Image 1 (tube, rainbow, N blue to C red):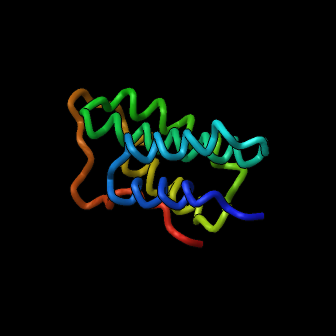
Image 2: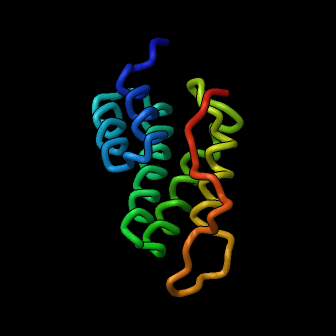
Length: 121
């Protein structure tokens, strides 16, 4: 199976913290993909980008909700899929967004938590 090069572009944009642009690139692939397995996986990647975009705009509650959706979509594709380390992405995303942490108004991510990255397996 050949991978759409726009997926690679979406991953690069995500890793450059250009989350809105990553969402747009990945969504273009999602819209044109007919393979349901790939579509579902892409939904998870798109939701991950949207969650971090929410954080960039100080929307912690929105980020938590979308992060949970991203993890639900990505879970079946662990530990890796299409050359990406899904387990690592899910773990770093949930830690960074703080979906397991108590909800505190105005809470921010700790500075010692690295930004989530989409990395090769």
